[in-house]
Image 1 (cartoon, rainbow, N blue to C red):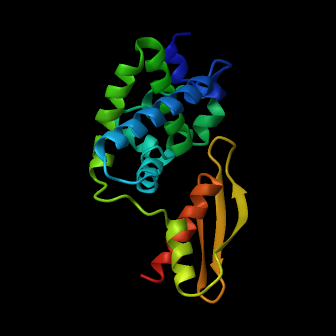
Image 2: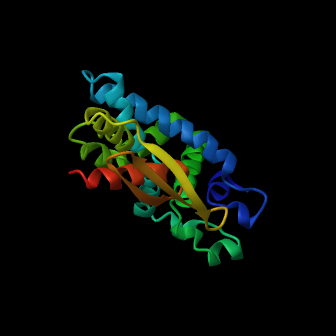
Length: 202
């Protein structure tokens, strides 16, 4: 099986899946984005660059890039994964995008991977007028400013198939309120819940 064929093969379709290439591609993406931010924003402190970085390498962003590239139509899935709509999963599409970056690195070196990332991620970086504030950090700062304890997060449940799980999380700030949200990971659900609670105060 060739590198790019393996990068497009989900674990449900056979033993040779994209997982090892995804591990490699994740690091390629991270290195390129970090270097790009270092060059692009020479006067920004580490904290602001980190906030930009976290958005750019997020699974949702990778999945959006993958859909723009037409990746879902190329992914090889097993029957059950197709029936479970794995092609609609940010986790699966995002993982395949990273696997393709890993394959590109092994096939042609860092330069082709770097060029593709800078081309496909440019709209996402260009749209960041300023470093985005993570909703969890924003909520924690808001609670502190109002004299309240830090937000408390509680996982209410997990549902969905293994390759496309859904997590439900509740965040509460005693004396201020609470909100619930879902996400493809516990971290995403916490982020969405924090954003939902902040919306009540804005």
